[in-house]
Image (cartoon, rainbow, N blue to C red; front, side, top):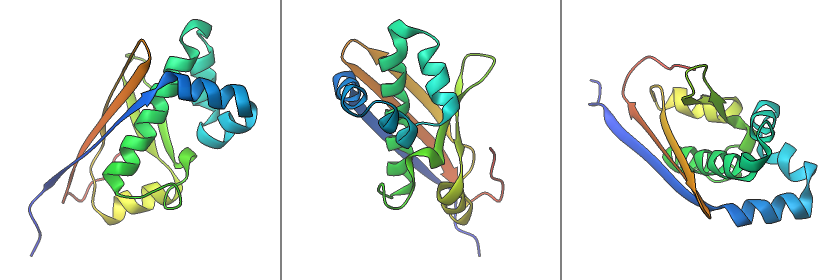
Length: 136
């Protein structure tokens, strides 16, 4: 007997200044620990938006971790990647342990919405479980 589909949601809010402080204090080490090469390249492609883009991606990673109900010891930061599509929309791509957990829980493709304004960046991630298909 299969269980009915369940909705899963993760949300996070990040102060852009906290990301700025981490970049100033730890530089490349922070960037390479948290973000994939493509995420860093995209964020840095527009210097006025770099910190906001990084903060939004950090929020997305936290939102996915909340959705998966794990902490930083359960899923590595770089196991959750935000990719920008040619349309301008962004998608979540899971790697490593995050992908294994999502498949084991029968989670479908994750829908992502991010925003940043002023001092804050936010992200919401939504998916359904109970389906046999896993995208990404």
